[in-house]
Image 1 (cartoon, rainbow, N blue to C red):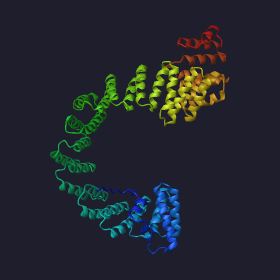
Image 2: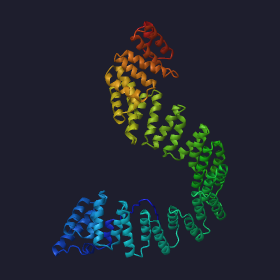
Image 3: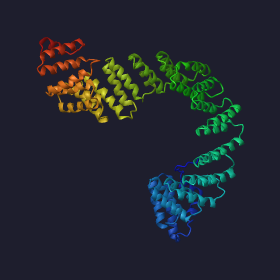
Length: 581
């Protein structure tokens, strides 16, 4: 038996009314009313007919029909407990809890000794936080069914929930007399005594289990853990040492000793304990991996050299040469050591063995992306999509790599396949796909298609700043919908007022609107904020603005700067030669 006492509100699973109908013959169910309505023969036949039809409809999943038939039964006999329970169950499923409660209460009123009806009423009363009602129901049930040991536990739950902690303990004691000492009952008594601040009695409860099972290290460790929780570290260590005499390699003991050493600020001892356990051979590999993760965490917390862990991995690889989970963990550790080549090798081993797990490919990309290794990115994402065609990130990275290599048609095809095949649950991600499709179509000269894609992207994510920027800039280049372009660009500079790209776009939109003085202010800000990475395009724009505001010599100076920065503008050379726009 498994029991759990909590002081918080508990929810008891309701017993399905169909189970009750299966336990009792239907005619008995239909005729078991106590001091209720006495039906004549004709009404009885109607009642039986409706009741049978209701059960059949429910069995077939026709719940509307079933409810209708039960309501016919209720109209004929409003005191029939089975009908009342069925109606209560329907209203409970419909989340009409108070109506359901009224039906269950009425069912119990007409069939007081029915165990199942009372349990359903208790469960719903508990859900509605009617604590005293729950206590009353279980007390009455226990008097009617003293042989049902589980009721003592339910009553203990109810007492505890109602704040009657000693009564809860008494109920557990009564249960213990019937079923004997058990871990779960003892633990619940421990918690109750702790809440009552009766610590010695609380620990005495655990000692009972130890006395009953002196050769089981688990209970010694449990007692040690509970003393650790209570900040009685010396007593905790005494019980851990007792457990060690019984079974030195007991996994729970090792974890508890690590906790003990950490709590007593003996980090070297904690690491040594973990090292000993990891390199030993008596534990399951999953337990060792847990310990290994804990060990790595301690190294990071103490800012220790992560290379200390490498010898542990060597030992584990020797013991478990085919466990690729080790490769994944070791790859991450090597990344922390800035050993990208070694990490890449570990992730590739993991991926070969687990081709359907996206994590391996993602870790390889984590290394390749910052280095802009486009061919590696393409190879990894292409392989990933063979096994994981529903993962959107691999379409995105593959498309982006082709985009950077100016393979625009191939990139456009990849992003389109991503929208078609990938499972995209995040609207912001889907918006980014449409954004890339918009940019690519613009580069390929499909301007109207590009603008349609931007609209789709903004419908999914109205705050997609790169889309708002690019869309507004391209509209300004086409000299169309300039008011809309200004509105969209204005959103970007409010969100990121120091972003030189967004400031330049906003300035250029103002330029196209003829607001040259305002355009000059924003483009000068763009130059100020891009001093570390100056942009040829921004300097050319600045020259155009200066020309329009009458400073032609300074305009020529800015155009020459743009040329020095490697501008590929087709009009820039002409501006420099003629000194005019």
